[in-house]
Image (cartoon, rainbow, N blue to C red):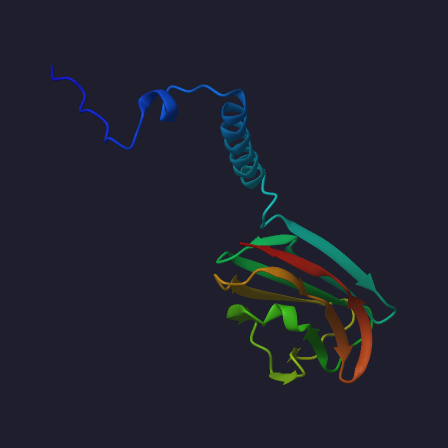
Length: 176
């Protein structure tokens, strides 16, 4: 075996490699521990995709929204909207706050709305009439754009035409 090559003249092994200062060792271990905490939090699903279900009820309908409580940039996810009609709804419309579409890629909406519109960043999705006792389930498949970071308003309002029936106010945190 050959001997290890000599270090460059500007590097002293005693100073740069072999010096065991307590502060330097503690700082290195603190950095490693901080990285380990971030990895453990990610493995524990702190940064996204565990769904949170929120419910709003009125005499006309019940709105149930299931969506992640937090996201990571670039993550593909699903929002689920269930509208249970207590009375007949002639023009059931979901009005989504701007956080559902701003810096998010909407891959598909199932079932397709009969009409959709946009107003001031909000998006309206109008569906076929719902008879009393029936439920409409809408799936929105999306992806958080890779550069998206921060808190977003993802409130949802259920309307029958222009009449507001139920509202769910919520926000979501998007992590890098």
